[in-house]
Length: 79
Image 1 (cartoon, one colour):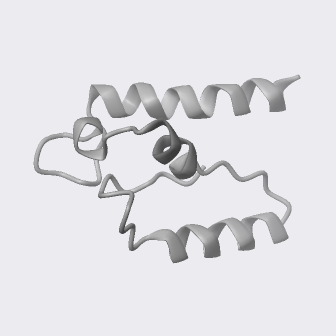
Image 2 (image 1 turned 180 degrees about the vertical axis):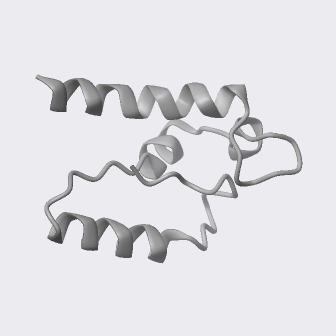
């Protein structure tokens, strides 16, 4: 699971790192989940998802969004 840094989605400077990690993980046989594009498409507000003043740690809304992204993937693998 790639955990997005909670910054502006429009000018997301961490995208190359997401791409690198995903590519290498897949090459090593891992299943990769990166919720960034889904959050961007749904209009998730990164500022509302984080602890105020901290772009690395999710607040309650961010934890819910992260769980909503990860839970279906876990259910699918657990089948």
